[in-house]
Length: 215
Length: 215
DNA sequence: GTCTATAGTATGATAGAC
DNA sequence: GTCTATCATACTATAGAC
Image 1 (cartoon, rainbow over the protein chains, first blue to last red):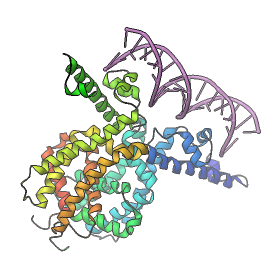
Image 2 (cartoon, each protein chain N blue to C red):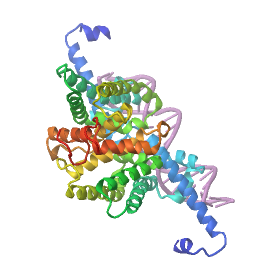
Image 3 (cartoon, each protein chain N blue to C red):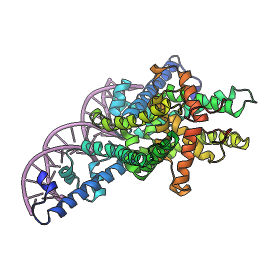
């Protein structure tokens, strides 16, 4: 395996590896789409295989079990968002304010969430319903991402920019809940993504009541 | 059937009707709990029957199909919240402000949500994954409740109390998303329900940033 | 790398006894 | 009203041909 991925030994080996990776990706993509809309247990390997253009038995060349597919789909649902968020924050000037920093994180989170909707919505929808063994393996990356948000809020609290009458954990759960649920109702045909981000960010920052102050 | 429910004709008929209704309720309760934690498709009628203390075949005396159970569980998930919210608003003085009105609605929504967690969480978790036929039957009450919130926000907007840079539909989706997700993380052991409601209401009204004005 | 065929198990639903 | 027994179907996973 190491020789195959590192240094193909004969002509054509690259193309073969590509074909393999491509089928694998197709299976993951269709699995995410089906898990999202049907649930994990209700989705059969035959459906996934059909959608990916292969037969059910062939899936076992790429994955050891249905649960292997599940864990990869769940992990990817967090990973695509986390990667995007980190890149977005790293692009900020080092002296960016908390408000700028959090704005960037919210926008990047929403971007990843909505542009990989099958993976992220599958994650949100089915996490509560999967076998404990799968939950346990997936929980690592989930915890990492939650910690990232907690550190952000902790530093804002220390700087006096976050409301102090609520714990940072509750703020994180409230904000991530509100953001994540948008994948269930966001409609790109009802306005631009930028305007959508502005509306959500405003409500997260300043609430839903009519402005009584100018920010 | 009408004679049985209206005027029992012999002694013991009431007790029989009670026993029937009680088994039926037990099935619904256990179904809600299992749908919540396993999903609809993954939950078998044998599991529901076991939990309710009867055999799988006996379920068909009370329900025509698995989908009948599903629709009742989903409807109840909205109904218990809706009833509580309406009663709470009707108890307000007729000249209550929008802020008081919305405070009452949020508290009642959270109360119903968290005190009937199996029905409400099952509803939230599995609605996106059920057969279209079930979705269609359940959608009526779902739409009614959404309309209730929309009317609340419309009147607040007309009175200049709701922020006007976002449509009432988006505000409703944002708020209900944030509120509903609390059933996935609320922990009654980490503080009183009243304090929890205060924190959530504050964030919905005024956002998460440090107070810059006194309300 | 994908196929066909199939083993072993579990499912929703029904029929009929009590 | 609840039971037992069973039908027809579908599932995950495996074995071996190509």
